[in-house]
Length: 155
Image 1 (cartoon, helix red, strand yellow):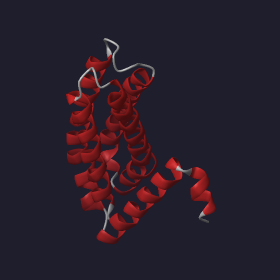
Image 2 (cartoon, helix red, strand yellow):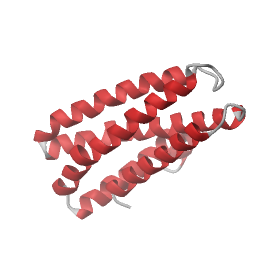
Image 3 (spheres, helix red, strand yellow):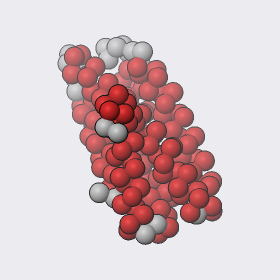
Image 4 (tube, helix red, strand yellow):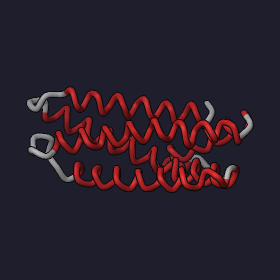
């Protein structure tokens, strides 16, 4: 799976979690808590991978994309602030749903813009082999972030 496939797969999974969380009723507190946890974990890992591997690669290969990368990093910071707020909240609290709605709007807009300003230029800048290698690095990075002890044992 190349880097574009990995990132777009994440985008779809994050969007599905957001849609499910938005559609889940107030009375389903346990499910909403789990969805919140899953969303924050997946979105956080995804952002870390982009910031550590994708954005530096793009800036190196296409320096003209630096403004788009800087904007994407700033968008991540805003999203992280909302995730921190949600992390400390219970789903039945009054501000929970509006925060989820704002996060969903920001994430979806970010994904659309990122596809145009980051992923498409990345596809043009790298060869298929380089995209494949970056995809492998992303998957390896995901394993290391999620289970560092297990990742270190594999060496």
